[in-house]
Length: 310
Image (cartoon, rainbow, N blue to C red; front, side):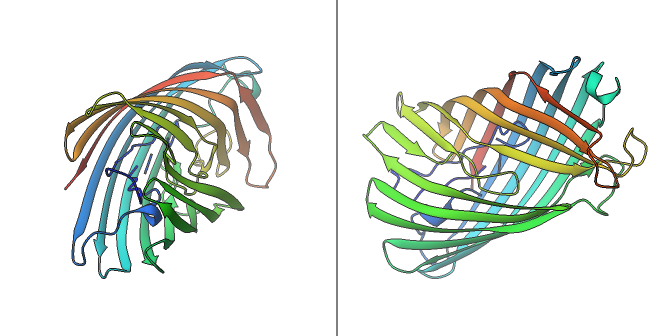
């Protein structure tokens, strides 16, 4: 995930571990504008493992996630910047006797390619507006793109009150396959001290808002942080599983810790540990009914990410 914060003392590129996405463009609406004609390109690669997690009705699951994200943004004028974001995400799920799903895993692997654009306009030196439309195709392997699209946009407005404080408000509107989702969120970038900072760690997008993270600079190269968010995403199931052509859904709250090391001025490694709480897995069949649904116990996940700005 990329995050460039307006009023910050440095530009930071943070991958997400949203356990299916604590990862992808955050609030460039808060970014310090580059000089006209400058293009910034960033690349992020993340691997994640959700360890074996118990289901409320019996059984368990675990899954692994691999993601790659490329963003290119150009500053066309002092006021206007625009760019494109390309992302690919792959998850591999494994199940052990899931009682609520008749002992059979409701899905196996999920693929999610995504394409987005970002537009930012500075009304004044203090105010900046953002508009980020996105479309992604999320489905179990073998589904293809038919009936898998999630599309919509995030809109934001942020005001710089001082060199250390930017606040704003945003809202996302997305059609998640067969369900429309609307959510508001706060934009926060506050350098509380030279070392302590409160900000948004995630991109607002189809799976939810930007969350909050408190970070502390241990040294010039090492940063320790912790935060949380709410995530919810839906994906189409293939025709060979227990619910042919249905829809799977995963909802949870990831609470995470982050340890980061700045390898170079534009390259960073992030190690994440997370607890997923309030989780729920469900399946909607082709008729719109929900034959299977189950909560899951607090899970533990770990992720490693490499991000680089060109």
